Every structure is written in C-alpha cells, then in structure tokens.
Image (cartoon, one colour):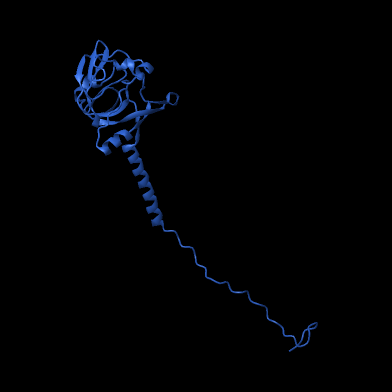
Amino acid sequence: MEEKPGMPAGMPIQAPQQPAPVSGTTTEPRPVSRLADIVSTLFAVVAALGLALCLIAFVFQSYQVDGPSMENTLQNNDRLIVWKVPRTWAHITGHAYVPDRGDIIIFTENNLAAYGQTDVKQLVKRVIGLPGDRVVVQNGVVTIYNKQHPGGFEPDKTLPYGKTHPLPITSGNIDITLGKGQIFVCGDNRTDSLDSRAFGPVDVKDIVGKLVLRIYPLNTVERF
C-alpha cells in the first residue's frame, strides 16, 4: 500500500464515516375525513338549533308590539323580552301559573271570532283581576272586590303602574266574578283595547309569559 506523505508509516487510512441511522420510522399524515367533518358540523348546528328552540319554548322569547292597545306604556313596534320560566316551572310542578296583579303578560286568545279575528292570536295586556276577584267596571273606573278588600279598591290608582303610566278612563259596564284559574286583563289604552271587557276572562293555562324588558327602541329600554 502506498503511504501518503506526512503520515506515519504503517497507519491505515480510514474510510469516511456514514451518517448514523435515525431510530424510528416516519409516516405520511393521515388525510382528515370529510365525512367526519360534515357529521360534526351538522351535529353542532342541530344542537345549537335545539338549544335555541328550548330557550324560546321554556325560558324567554322576543316579541314585537303590534297595535296601540298598550299605549302609553308600550308603543307600536316596541321589541320586548318575555320571561317564561315561572310558567315552565309551574307546568313542571303541576301547579297553575298565576301572575301578580299589575304584571304585563303575553297570552294566547282563542275567542276572537266575534271580533273579526279568524286565527288564534297572542296578545299583550296588563293583569287587573286575579282568581276569585270580583271585577266591576263602572263610570270609567275599575274596582276589585275580594277577601282582602271587601270594600273594594281601584288597582289603577293604588298600584305602581297607575302612578308611572297614568291611564285614561276605563270604558264599559262589567260585573264579573273570576273563577279558579281565571284572570281579568286590560290594555293600558283603555279607550282602544280589545281585552277581557270584550272577550271575558283569560285562563291561566293560556299565559305564555311575563314581560320583563323592552329592548327597542334603544332610547326607551325599560325593565318591567
């Protein structure tokens, strides 16, 4: 073997070292299944829709006022939030939901055929009479008689809503005693409201919910 100059005699020449092997193996990334993505998206959409429907059916719902019957408390096209939880809880526990006197409620009214309404409508009115009350409308005044007030009282003058939103005279000539599960409702625009003075008491089972908030117009946002 020929020796290269400058190297000690007899020293073998080493071959260049090869790179050390890397332990383990590599694989190509798996393609994401489009079908799995579609199923996941559909599931998310269905779950969101189901949650929205449950909230609307059992918790709260948005409504828009149509008409002048609740002026000047509510105006045409006002946007409202109606709270349904008390009614939902009453149904769960098997009890009737009876709102407080003075509450503004949404309810379903079926007895409107005599007034040119051929379909079932949901109306917004104020609760004036509660189950067991005797409601008398006479000489432009609403008077309530019950065990707590055998001599009668005028809710439009004694309850806070009458002081916050003064009401016009209440037309009509009514003398009715409410049965179990019945309430008497009136619009705040007493001279232009189709309410219990016309179609009679409302069954509490037809109550949808209680008004808690006006959210539009923004300059009239109000909690009820």
